[in-house]
Image (cartoon, rainbow, N blue to C red; front, side):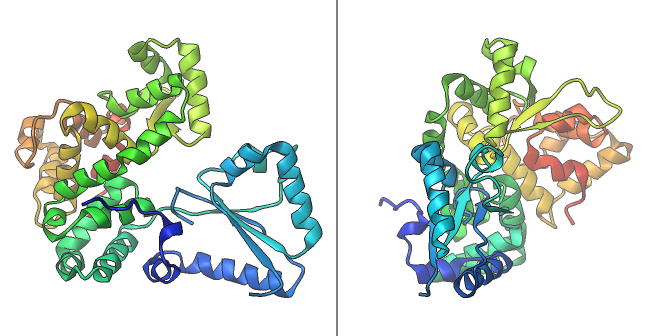
Length: 373
């Protein structure tokens, strides 16, 4: 049975209202700005900056999704004309969204510089994502799934999912279409379905990149290390260091990658890059690695957040001088071989190896930095 991809514009407004979580304060602010626009001459034109899927009076409220694409399509003259019409009418309020802040609203020379209030919109917390899944399960009459989510196990599973996926609102919604009580309890089948369901979305995004950028994204996703330097990427891909460095700068500006350095006191000359979206990395790895290392990462996070799990005890023993080996740690996990060296890096990172911590998938940082509580 085919399932229609989740698209907010195709959902009934009352359903979207009932399913919205974690946005009460933001919606209150936006509502007040609409009221001010309708009753005064104040126009708080707003740009909501966040992941895709995160956003009758005298006033006309113009809602624009993916403003960066719209501005690119209408060009400089169109942007200038839109700003002029909005300002001269005195009756239009612009409410827009974009995945990143872009040059057309940030550059002083552009028509819309200073014309929009930039409002960051983050992902959902694990608790908010869990509440969304419960509401969606109740909506379709799946009381068994809602019951699992409302249990202590559901809390641990939600923490694992939030850490694994980055908390993007659209991902939580798509997951609700992939999961039932059995697959969510086991977790790996639900996440595998999620990766498969998101594949067309990720492929479309990749096809929009220049060839050199695609090569770098695939290397960061499929390489043994989750973070790499420009020179390391150049060595692995055959690109020149100059080409790799320039492309990484553009990918960083477009929020495909984030840059990091080792802590102060370490080698500050090198900059490391990693993909921002963990689900994109899982998608590309899944296609070439027969499920690795996604299955291992799921097993690690699930054991970490499970109060009855023994992973935290094994790691604590290592930190106390017990010298846990990757092989001993692997016995705590229902997973296959660790061909990516994740367990070795995890142990070394827990022992204070900053580069090992940096090379780990970002989802596993909690296992290094803090306790599951």
